[in-house]
Image (cartoon, rainbow, N blue to C red; front, side, top):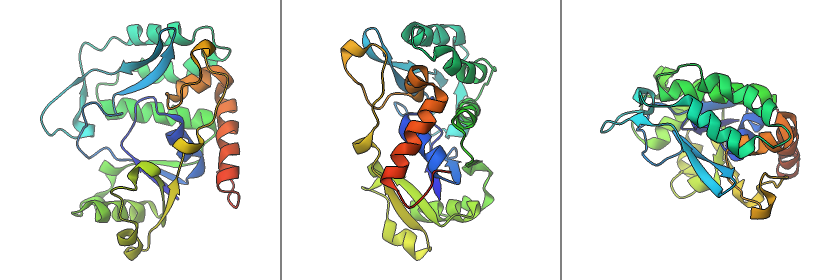
Length: 241
């Protein structure tokens, strides 16, 4: 089973579940960069409520994600300070930062490189065995049309089942993919988002945050166990990989 998504920055739990559920995760890095999307920003929880953390990028009309350069003014220390102010008192903060700080501080100049590094380290921390792939490295994905492109990505990865987020129902043509012998399994993660002991509890639980929120609260092993438990209920006939 394969999951295909544009490479996210500090991804949310739904993406992290795919790292556990799937045998392949393809980072769709040769499509257009979306301003205001999830490729260079995500949400955390702070003393003042949910807030964005953003990687500034040098923008150009029509640029692809893998051609998107991190802006020269990106202040890594400032971002790390923001994250530590938000989560420094959380029980597993140091364990969480040991995973994300090295990629953030590695000096990456290209957004896709940074996100791939982050996803790789997060996958290792979660005990994922999924193969991480970049669509820009798949010579067989140059077909025209979104459906054909997805089918080629699946074929290049050797996969016949696509794990698709519920938000793609409006435009993902499952019938057309079936013609390419690709089956679609829908992931209704938003409706079953797990709850955990979140920072700043007086604010109430806030779903949909970066995985760093959960990792600081319950540790990487805790996040992995929580996601695997959810999968065993949602797809009881399959073991999380």
